[in-house]
Length: 183
Image 1: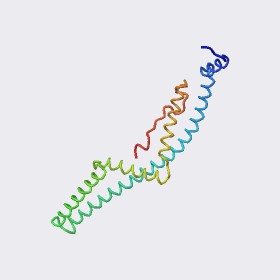
Image 2 (image 1 turned 30 degrees about the vertical axis):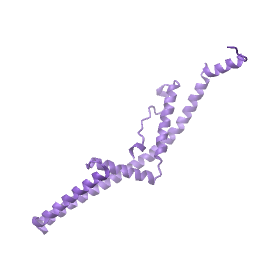
Image 3 (image 1 turned 180 degrees about the vertical axis):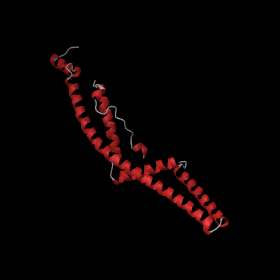
Image 4 (image 1 turned 120 degrees about the vertical axis):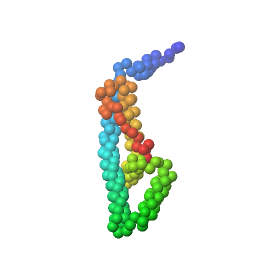
């Protein structure tokens, strides 16, 4: 090969090879600045997310305790009607219809949501619905939160690729679960 401008070629090679790590240091500093800004933004979103989680958990607990209270009241009412006001002969068909009606409700729940009716599954589903309601009410952007977490993780991995020790990288490794997967 014949190079017409060997000085330009050699300066280009020095730029590409970066023997003094000037560009690498600039990239590392820029990534740290960006990472700091994004982590602060994530902290604020995490605070909002925690408030929403607390509200959803309290709301779910209230609904389930309300259901438990309703079942207790139903049992007390049936006992009262059976042993004091009426007799078992009158209450037996009523209890049969209550049990049959409950079975129909549980079957309808299974058909509608394709989930087994257990209290754990019902609690998780109710919590998920309440959480989604509060996310919408507070205008919490789930997609933005997920993208922010992915971006932070990408910057952390970029810093590792650039040769930074993991002990120097803030919040490494970032543990997160995308919220949009849970909705």
